[in-house]
Length: 164
Length: 429
Image (cartoon, rainbow over the protein chains, first blue to last red):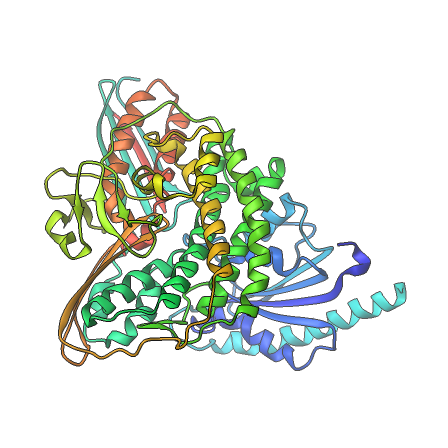
């Protein structure tokens, strides 16, 4: 699809709401679903990340929200430009059971199927226990991430209007 | 080089966590152990004390790739215990459901997990840069299979719509039409994938396996049939535990299943095809002939071709079932619990999956036995490895390791199912 025919923005909250801080992606998606302007699509995804390549096919700007591995402090927010660099392996949550986000992004890069603008917000988790809620520091980060994404969407849409 | 040890801690591109230990002494393979260290998952114990209506939601959690197989073996075993007869349209919908799983599971394995071995890439990401069309086809096929599963199962991973007696909700004809259009495109992509796979370089290798699969009087088997083998076995699912035994081995958290009389045996696409080629439509057999797939394939490296053929068949069969679909008068047959024992075996993508349940009068599960395909293939995987490694000992360690990993992936092992990843160690002493 040509750039001009693409929908403007897709936000995908990735994770399992029943696995502690892995649920931060869906939590941000819920928050955003009532705040984004018309034309912006918000999805939740869990499990096999390969489906993302089809999900983002028709979008010019894709913002992914996912839990990151605990490498510095719980709730720390990382904004990553995935068009220009891979998702750092130290931050990516890995699975022996399915293709993860980092592998999916690199597969899409190899296939030249990355959207024109691909951004990820990764929030470092603290605990990923079955049935556990979000930890306090990650809960605190949800609102900040949602606000930053709303601002980023506004800027993207504004830039789109300027170019129209 | 007569004595050496090769050690690989994790073999990638298999589902789950395991390792391989290969010891070579005086120029011959001394020992091969496929060590599964995925923690035991205790699903059989988890099922005890739960109601019969909970079985399908619990067993669907055993595997993210083949949950439908678990649901189908579970539903047929419970219905066997309860003496239920199922309406023909429900039977057809279940077969359609299974087609979705075969398409997505096989397509994932062919292009993303197995093909990189033949083409010398470390993974599908590297392969995609040079063979993008093959990977794109796999993604499209996987999507088509997943759409079918989502429609019939409510969601694509751990579906929730199957129930004892049928489905909670059945689709109308209009809902199936978009899937049908996607499947027509998928069928073309599946044929291209088969022709592409036929051009891969296959190592010369063959073994005289005992093939074990279901056989149905008329159909290529999915949900029904007797358990048959190339050595003459022909039994009902109820007799499975008479002929097959599970045993513990020190190096694995998964049980090894063997034929009581003859030991290791092979389940999966090669066995299904060898024992049921005659049940395939003539167009599918003609495609097999076109790509040089022999009627009985004994080279496990060529299993990728059989999988690719089964994807074409599953697309074809799904299209046939959709074209003939008449929504059932009722979405499910009501169940009435009773004290009984039920058995069933269905054809998961990786081979036969056996379930037995013992119920008490109110339908509480007293005992459950689940035997997944990978538990059944572990013996064959180890035997293959011994022969593959012995035939390739002149290779440098890195190449030998790659050949051994490829040999394991020939059988698309689903370690999580079997234990309910792979670490390879080759010791050349």
